[in-house]
Image (cartoon, rainbow over all chains, first blue to last red; front, side, top):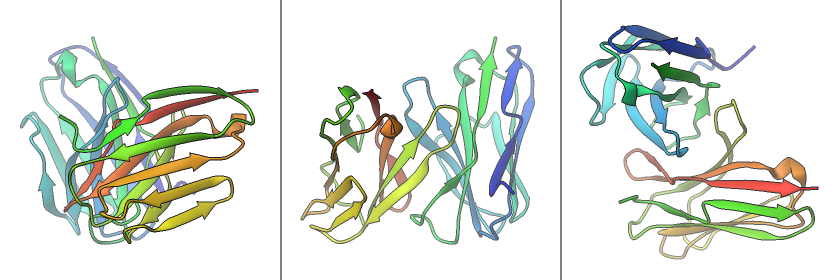
Length: 113
Length: 108
């Protein structure tokens, strides 16, 4: 069983559309994250939730809205997609506090045309 | 400006060579992690160093945390094609901050 699974793996869409990426972890972890990896491989944190509560919200356009229905799930909804949103988005989880070992999903490659 | 600077950014070597990747900052970190990422996959943790001056070994990989906890290095001895990948350092300062990565290619 995959520990952190995210869907879809690939997402190709037109500018202006709204899309969602789903993430689930079966590790029993309390903290989940969304990271964005740009074309230069730089990995930057976007959001973090601990037990469904938002604890990190970096300078991210409010077109990006995370939702955590329970501590095993953290979804990312993006409104009005722009060309600059093209990147690989990674979901991750850690046992409890920030700074512990991160378990990453295999990423969602988003291409906005 | 990156809080964590990794160097080199790209490294292409022959099998059997040794190499060192550096991760530098002017800031102090509570701990520092090294990850390896393969194409199409998420990063996987290799090691965490916590104490200044700490050295950890993982087979042919040696990780060191600087005495002042501002920098770290990863040394690979006798590199193999299977070591090919993107190596990322990440420092903890309230959250994990990643360096920009070192893309290593080991040719047979």
